[in-house]
Length: 154
Image 1: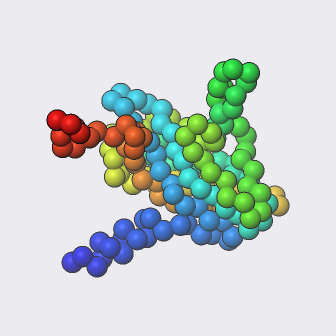
Image 2: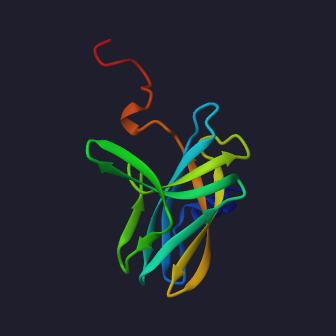
């Protein structure tokens, strides 16, 4: 039947909401062959000042919070202890900026796979676990995606 499959698909792509925290567009970049460190991305919106302090997954050995920023003429990446989630503002974890670093995948991941993630959100000294699912997406940016069919002019 198609209806159960549609419901499951809708649940996996719907934003995760928990106690005023919305997590949407959760994805992991597809690994290159032999790659053991991956990047994860998402959009997080909180209805109160909060912080993302930790992430984990049974699919990885370890996950860290990272940021990338320019230091002079060089892009630097470093681990951060927490990611501030200002009240009412969507914080985007995206390529070239804030992101999750996922170390030691326990299985081979392919485009379309779903990976469970647990996020720990701290607000006012209270830590809350939020369960979500990340989709593995192509490591090729849309502009780099392979062309299908003949090239123009050929």
